[in-house]
Length: 486
Ligand code: NDP
Image (tube, rainbow, N blue to C red; front, side):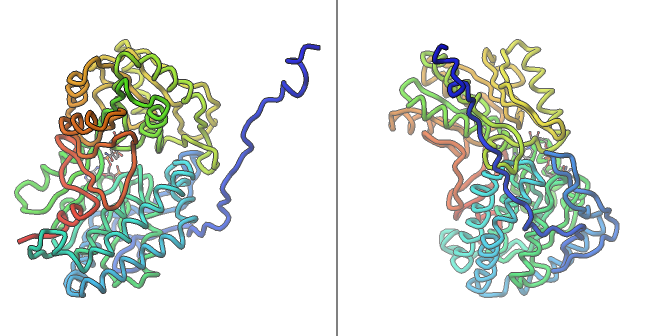
């Protein structure tokens, strides 16, 4: 018998399932609206099931707020605001710090709920979303008694009541990005989580109760776009929005002439540039992290991969080999790299854009993998032979799909990278520090990573140019949108 035919060498090695247990998660059957420090029944809202995108099964029932509910939440925030702002900064800091500690204490539960409600792999909820959410509250707790230092020694006062609308891709983290600086600066808030992912925000409501945050300082009104639109048109003093450019433009139009504060963190089509002198294996890992992290549901995803022509074949070859090792499936399995697509609507959008790529002549390759029968899934996909005018090179796909373009010179790389109506982020892979700085200076993008991608830190400012929005979140720069500076 030939050596290759022995039973031992015919063994195929695979991962054993490693599911995270969800037994300890304490979800209620139904959640009211978090208004004035309590979970209350809706006035004109309705009960809706929040669905697990990996199974299409309900996780818990939540309440979508109507216009009257939004008005009640804004009134509760208004009633609480003067007293909250009058607290010495060091006292507000204690509450913000307690919220951070409670997020840490409940981190395991929060990570599981984030994965159940949104479809993201537990490794990412556990290691990225929840720790970063806590880190944001810790960071801004530190600023609460030092606001003047954050705005160049000038006098600063809170805006008042802020309305905050967040998307479904990082539900708790986006809530933390918005609430932590707002509270530290003495504002009170009404938060509208996304329609498909309201649960961790509601758990944050419980955490606010546990932290004994004064009633009305944080109010949480889940709902769909109608609830968001009602909040935008309500009696708040400022709106902070993260989501699509289309909705961002509607919000800006709705606020025109009202003298209100506004920050918009919108979409992107970020360029990830690989130069021929880059460490190719590292770059391949960075490309994977840049586009397949969180199923590509990332505003700053490195979705336009620009490779120097001399190494294009090597990089795409190694990338394809690496992509084939990605494990797609159960978000609660600790081996999973790519989880479920957040909703049926988002899956349709991805499929339509991918189809347009094929129709326009790009070459599609999707990895072979067994996708579960129920739920919404999309296999990691690479497009080569992409032209700059193709829709897949221009529009935000917001899924696990990377479009590859090539360049010959540094000047061409810069021109192609900036050839976008967006300007949120970029990545530069090169061995030469001088080249990285030169290219970074020429790129019109709010965040630029060198030899890494999708790294976030509460001390660093994040935000865009052009149709990616305006205003910064994170660090000292993130205080400014929540203060009136004189
Ligand atoms: P949206 O911009 O519609 O959603 C973002 C948030 O805004 C959600 O809470 C949403 O509620 C709310 N909203 C929707 N309409 C209004 C309105 N008229 N006024 C106020 N708030 C509103 O994004 P989608 O979920 O529809 O995703 C569409 C595309 O947007 C994606 O394919 C992706 O390309 C992009 N996107 C970009 C994000 C980013 O971080 N840059 C985040 C999310 C999406 P509801 O959940 O009910 O829709």
